Image (cartoon, rainbow, N blue to C red):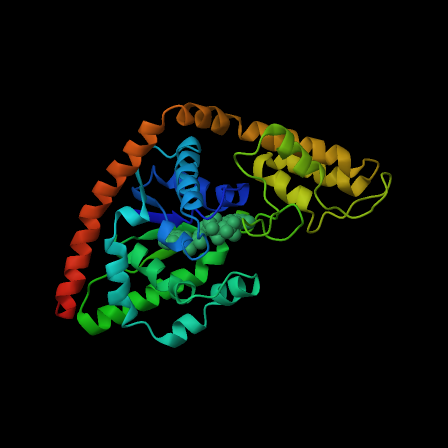
Length: 319
Ligand code: ADP
Ligand code: TRP
């Protein structure tokens, strides 16, 4: 089974990225041939500073390795080191109906958030389909917000196969429902673009301060607290055991404690959860050549497969 996923190095990675995409992907490295890449071509739709793009790409590589990606089991590479993705993207674009892209909500959502509209931003799902199809991926672990893009990739593959003969395998999404959307500090989806994130690389002081500043309602200390849609409970359940979560829920219902107490508990739980990640990250930052080597080797291996699929598609189309 071939597993593939990508993440845009468009900012520092946060715990929403970790629980929604990185952790499930890393767990899957045990289950099959895993391909993970840093989607820097995609990140160009929003990052227009060469230095930022280089820094974010490198930090994302370090974050993946520190979070447990094992280069002896999974490939890690930069999308731009396999330029075949962009050529296949063009071949796919000529069988992609405009209507399919017009229905994608991510373009509209991004423009509504203030991201400059560009044809690349609109075209983004075709490049993503190329990323997936070029490796004949079976399984694509992502967060819920990427579901529509995976449907687009399947539709494009079906259309291509119908027109030019069986060329691409149809990928299946793998959406982790229980951590479908990690809320941010303000209760909205945690996102690099909302300034509401707990970053993996945050210093202890910053991490604590952010948690203590999570927006809550104004229930007085003695009264019961609503458990429904509670950002604190949702974040706590990511790192605490089911028993610990049940205990906090029942304490919410009972009342008698202020939100400050729960926030301290949340901070300790999350901070401890990421202790092994921080230790590994410190080691990796001291060995930049190791990270370079992993990325170079990953790209070399990925490229062999990408080239084979691209040749097949070119041939099928008459090039
Ligand atoms: P962001 O919204 O911060 O820019 P991306 O859109 O780059 O994040 O998402 C990268 C990956 O992380 C995707 O697979 C996405 O589904 C997942 N992801 C992002 N934010 C969250 C979140 N708040 N909860 C769960 N998964 C998330
Ligand atoms: N669009 C994805 C995101 O924003 C990143 C991505 C690019 C991706 N290409 C991919 C994810 C291929 C899975 C498979 O999160």
